[in-house]
Length: 502
Ligand SMILES: [Zn+2]
Ligand SMILES: [Zn+2]
Ligand SMILES: [Zn+2]
Image (cartoon, rainbow, N blue to C red; front, side, top):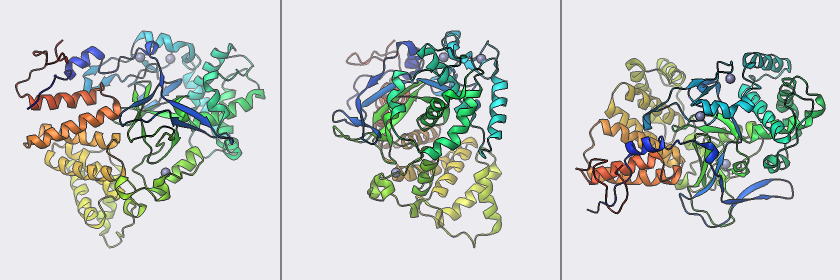
């Protein structure tokens, strides 16, 4: 059997590269492999400049500005966005609390705090007051939504940065000129006046008022800034696809939405990487999904209208995407099954499960099992409610150490994700990795099957996160060890100079 050069040992790799989280943002050089076009009506789009193959990088960009969500404030650096704890790379950093006076901001190092100071200082000491002020003012505007705290903080950050770049004092009376790198973003894509007036108008007013000397003269600047910012705001995704921060990436904001696009967006701390996951021809419009693609067409449409004010006309929404490429109709995803004859107790339990996803107990798991028996019998394999319940059951069975059951639930989830996404979708590959993690702790004797899976995951993780990412390397290493049973990382230098030694 050909062994090939040893891949980099992930343990080695982790210590060398900080688990692919080197994060010296000052040394980061952005890469743009697409062109932006603007239609006569002012709508912009991103297009491939050449034919692209699966796995090719088309853009990297460091966030122009960003804010860690309140929930994750203690877990991520507010400047470079690295995670303080990363189980996969064994990284354990002690987050350093901001020394400027706020209790909410943490940094990975004092260097990061220093870098962030120029903009953070307008929020730091007055954080508590600002949050209180913002919420009170927002309530006065009669908006019935919850105060968008993250948007508010992000806008203040962005405003301070605009001032800085434009040479205008942040606490002055003058609105700054629009920075060049944001120009395309702000001068294209008409925003509907209603959208602008209501939500954005209220928030704009509050942001402006939160800078004491600014006069209403700059209202127009604020409103359009806010409208564009909220539409073009990205959620930074952690390795397990949870949103831990929000921020602006002016270049990648040129990409429009499709529920079945060819582009995937991943994050390395504050750096965004966009890769091709379906083949692309030169000139093709490049798109990625703004919303959860496991949702039904109905749900996706609602979300897109609400957040971005447009109607998606992608093949999936139009019903022309082939079934085996993720074109599953809503009828198969939806909760359209009649449960009226199911005993009331179990119906209540269904509700309970969806509300208590996070809880773990043998009792809750048994209830979930009972619900699954009914759901599996009644629903098609691509029913979303079934998927969500399998997901809860999977998590709980893992926590309870019921590994055989975890594999069973995981298999069902993979089946669902395979149908509604595509081969190189992060959700699918992550789920397959979870499956392998479970199997590692359990028994899994079919070596050939294992080899096939490791090879596939390593390759596809490379397509999504890049070949150097720890996910890709981890599976390359597992594959290598499987093929070379006696292999001890670090002892052999591998063949062909492929590394593996220190
Ligand atoms: Zn940092
Ligand atoms: Zn602070
Ligand atoms: Zn769509």
